[in-house]
Amino acid sequence: AQTVTQSQPEMSVQEAETVTLSCTYDTSENNYYLFWYKQPPSRQMILVIRQEAYKQQNATENRFSVNFQKAAKSFSLKISDSQLGDTAMYFCAFMKPLSNDYKLSFGAGTTVTVRA
Amino acid sequence: DGGITQSPKYLFRKEGQNVTLSCEQNLNHDAMYWYRQDPGQGLRLIYYSQIVNDFQKGDIAEGYSVSREKKESFPLTVTSAQKNPTAFYLCASSIVTGANEQFFGPGTRLTVL
Image 1 (cartoon, rainbow over the protein chains, first blue to last red):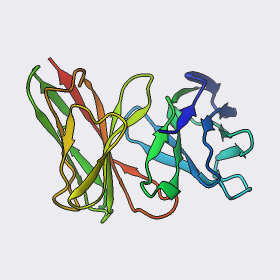
Image 2: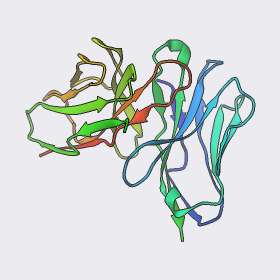
Image 3: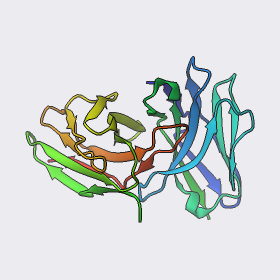
Image 4: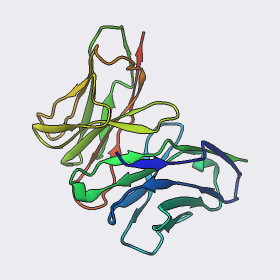
């Protein structure tokens, strides 16, 4: 399994502020996919954003954006204008498609708490 | 509505018993996955299947078994050989091309008494 590291177990942010979650991964592959998933208190996993490694442009989905640094093997998630509904655990995940098994390797997660 | 259902939501097991967790999807996805979630460890892959009647072990398959007799169904059996089965179990499905997201079910919380 690929190694995905999320070094921040917990983060707290004031409503309307910005928070950045870090993720690093270890791979010798050149082509792969990266994902951020959100798990709110309901525990339903939801995809937040995805990035193909061959694309240089950073992915953006509304208030969520990534900073993909391929050489550094870094994939951070920025949540702008934080809302109370963003309170959740966030998981970074790696997929190596050329293996033909489409398995995801997950980091340990970062718990984000948005304060009113 | 299309989606993934898991049942039951909560399950209690006595030591030495086998239990089966249900996972059904109506998304017409070829691939299905089982993950285990423990505090501080993220999600770990137990088994996965890309086609009916075929499945592969994931990273922590010991003490678990699966079957894939139908495209829509991928039940997971937690056997008595699993030494520490208390955990949250998530089932997921996806299509098998490109950077396609895995869709997750609501999960089953298994507690060994």
